[in-house]
Amino acid sequence: MDGRVRGRVEFERFVSSRHQWLTERAATVESLRTTRDDRRTVFEAVLHLRLPDTAIDLPIAVVGDREAGAANRVSAIRVYHSHWPLLGAHRVRPQLLPPDSTLVFR
Image 1 (spheres, helix red, strand yellow):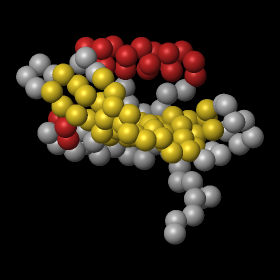
Image 2 (image 1 turned 90 degrees about the horizontal axis):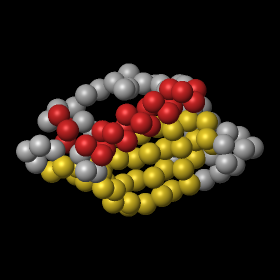
Image 3 (image 1 turned 90 degrees about the vertical axis):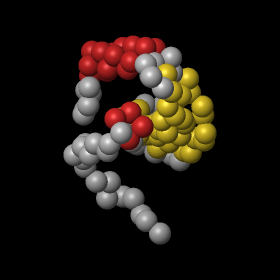
């Protein structure tokens, strides 16, 4: 399942399918670091997966955005990883979210 997931039912379906996928691959998580500010939390880790003929390490980043003024309410979750360790090739997908014009790069 790729793309946007909206609403409780879709989210629960997404979580269930991802949980099954990770369980089938005996996934373990190696936490690396967590970075947060008042709007966003970024969790970086390595997923250790067992595939039928090999084991792979898949670096991931999970980004959670919080609604303005609602410190505990998540407005979006994004997961980033390369497909190279899984497929032996890159898979480029279109942008899912609009650009954030409030970001300042220095």
